Image (tube, rainbow, N blue to C red):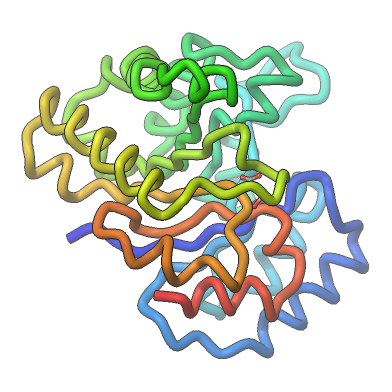
Length: 249
Ligand code: PEP
């Protein structure tokens, strides 16, 4: 059975004291849904966040990592470094990483392999640009992103993969895909997985939606049968808003 998941991507927000204060606020929230909850602070705050939340239901995850074990990669963080802090889940392929740091399906395939080799869970992000959607090309774009980065894997690997469909035009813009657009794409993604790996694998993979999910639209988006949760940017920076989304299931 696939899981409901709500993950907060803090991006490059919150210094140490802001992190401490948001974590205190998060600990004061009540969870009334069955969703797994994750937060992704910056690298510098991962250790503190993970220690502070160790005894809670909130999992602390990383926003990115390098695919190499170690070496001359200034400014980068390896899978083993994350594991040594107790971090076992990593977000890969966020559209901001693709756009600003030249991440490609090929380099992401290497990152996915590295994460799986280290027994880490991956939240793999992908999604079309506005121009793709205007040209009605969104399915072809999403299909090729998934195929190029993931379809070299065996079916079993998908036990450790969560997919996050994030149309680039809806991230941080206040523009959300309609619940119908999200459902249509999520069903297409699941069918793409089914065609390659069979229905058992496809049915068990959680597919999150990301792009301006807020307390006032989460319930409708999450009510769609193929939407298994959300990757939340802006609204994850306020504990009350984030938990309103967590509790929208
Ligand atoms: C994101 O960055 O993954 C995201 C979905 O951001 P926002 O919720 O702010 O659109």
